[in-house]
Length: 354
Image 1: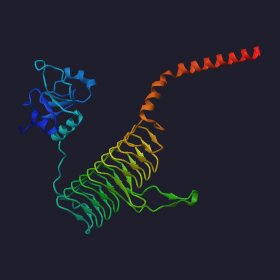
Image 2: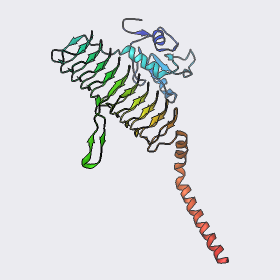
Image 3: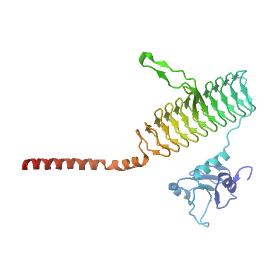
Image 4: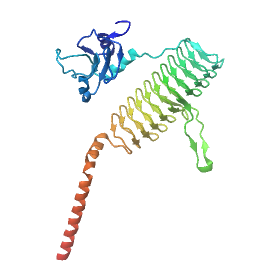
């Protein structure tokens, strides 16, 4: 390792992979495959784009198993071969681009209740509000505009970006990242009666985010009517997602932008929801299920099942069969009409004979 970079061998060790070529090459930066030059590393996760390697000027390329086809004499660059090149790319990108650190400081322009407890190393920017009885863990950063209500708990090493709101009583685990405009613990959508008789149902539960959760900008997670809305350990949620009251999202699940999950739905572990997925209330999405973008889920999904995209999403294999038939529909329709015409002529002919 040098002061200005890392050798390819060191990157392979830290990212999990093996070097094909010269491991002594020093890498200073990560760049795209079209723009990378000497001293830089890029990645190629999809074999379909392998032709780009010929014009790539990077010193090294992260690739998957079996993608290095050149003989040693033909090689003009080195390779870092990894089982999952995209994961290796992410780890290396983190090495060269560590998160910005904040020095411990509590702004005099912040409003912190005397009954709040801020542990060592907390950073508080101007115009932050911290309510009575709230506890903030060590080394957590609260950017400008953050609002923490009363009796909130925030763990260690969290980052709450500008204008994050965490309402009364909600609990945030450690190493949680909430991006700008996230609202945790707003009222769940609950009313009784009809017309002028609508009566608001008090939402007296909380939201609990477990450790290592990351939530994108302007996403909302509603407090439970009673009990808890729970976002499990390691869950990653995109921007503009709505999660309703009493929903439970299992560990390590992924939810893409503009998804909406209605009340009391149970999302299993390691589930993936594509963008604009809508799930009605009181359903169960089993562990490991995959839901395609734009899907409307009207019934529970068993564990490990892949649902296609679109309203009333069907099992993936069934949907593939339907999609395969779609181009043939005009021909099939013409064939059916001709058959109908011939059947009608045969019926008339038989009637005339009788």
